[in-house]
Amino acid sequence: MSLLNGESWAKVWTYRSTFLLGLKNTALLSLSAILLVLIMGVIFGLFATGKIKVLRGVSRVYVEFMQNTPIVLQLCFLYYALSFSGHSIGILPAAIIALGVYHGAYMAEVFRAGIEAIPKGQFEAAQSQGFTYLEQMIYIILPQSIKIILPPMVNQIVNLVKNTSCLYIIGGSDLISVTYSFVTSAITGGAYGPAYTLCGVMFFLICFPLSRLASTWEQKLKLRDQQTVIRTSSKRRRVVGM
Image (cartoon, rainbow, N blue to C red; front, side, top):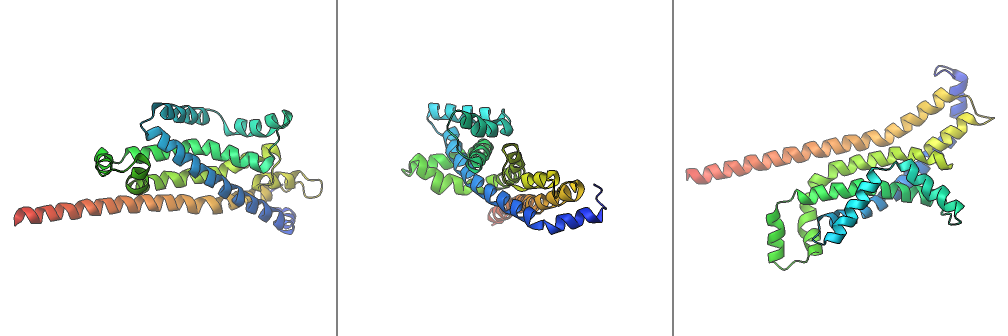
């Protein structure tokens, strides 16, 4: 139906609780998956930058496989393939695992890039002080790489929220799924334009602030680095002039 159809908008408003439920489920699903993404990202990011060749290889295989296969395929495998084999794990766990493992591969690359951007002298200095590899990462390297990691990390979180829309493939109760059920129901069906418009607005209200946050962080970090360089240069000039 047309976006200007008042009856369709009235129907959407009457069943607004349905969309709010979908929004809530999408938010909860996203938060659960984000936790798994961060865990996978840190683990495989450390594997990729470590000294153990086997772990570097494991990380590379994981990242390449996940990045080069579609998330819908991974989701269908976890839910349908395991269900038919007698090992069903449920819709929500399948969605969390699929989103977490898929985006974890991208997050691992984010952590790898952040760690590798730190000058090697920092590693050597930490090692000379007797720090183990894990202690180097926790106390020295990761705190310094935060400014590099944060912007792409937020971008991955935004992509994860949008990819929750894949859940409708297995009949979930996320925002896209409840919207699809709404427009195809015998009782509420037909209000396609208003329903999908509202769904899009809800996704926008989640993703846009996160995207702006990533951009703002990146600009502030660049400005801070520029100011640090300027202050350092000024100090050097004053010392030379003395």
